Length: 344
Image 1 (tube, one colour):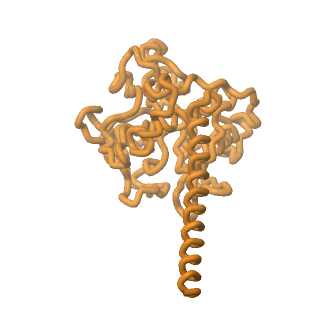
Image 2 (cartoon, helix red, strand yellow; image 1 turned 180 degrees about the vertical axis):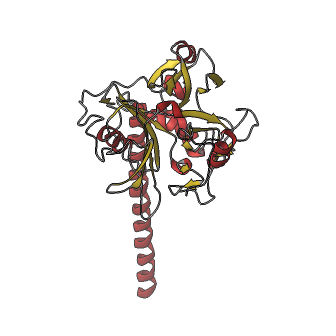
Image 3 (spheres, helix red, strand yellow; image 1 turned 180 degrees about the horizontal axis):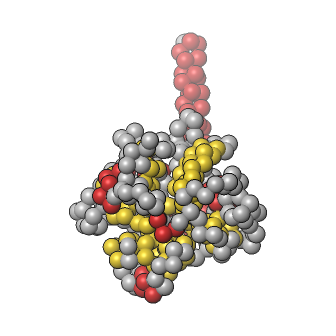
């Protein structure tokens, strides 16, 4: 009899402990959810609202959470969800003439290996900005399929290139055929529309890099010859943007320009044991360090990769290999050279 009571008491105690554990777990989850809701609804965290809205089409959980956003943030298009960033008043620590690894020769194209606490990658310097332009995979949007970067490079007879604009990528299985935002290639609008507002990253006919919010019509009016969209803007007129505080470490691709016209392509590897990746703040600081006066973030993640003269110069993070994309930043062959060829 006593043993039976003892067993009953133990079962009762175990049940109480289990119920207490469940109650505490549910309480912690509720507190966490409430804090998330407060974050995404607060006007103090526009970046959180933008990231959630942009990921809603790719993740079932994000679609549910998107309902927590203020009505205006949830309904805006990706290009409209974040206003033009206010530049942080920060002077360039270096100018183009005194940037690290300053050139002692007048090479048309130079590669610099860089590394930081959590990343490694390459910087590509192109002295003549007229060599840099945007290539497309073909017709964009609809059921059209993108191409891998080496194929886009080959189709244009370019010397090399890297990934550029973001694209519709449902559950990470997108076909790379539909870009996000405005695409202008060699003076022709390939995707987007005149009345849309976009975070434009592109060159005008005078080979100046623009990184600014504008409509498609404004881009055409100021003579943008080649442009893509992704963002955010990293540096504007020599000043670092003030909305880059993020702790996300990812593979990154970015483009910038020095005052002397030299184009800076930055490709950082990530999601690897040897290179976790970088934050937006990291790449903005790197661009400033190498003398950029204007710079913008391009699509990153598993799309980030750099090719030149038939050689893949950085390691991509996708286990499936190079991804199909709608656009690429291309580099024309150096003067006196023909189309793309193999590295010697």
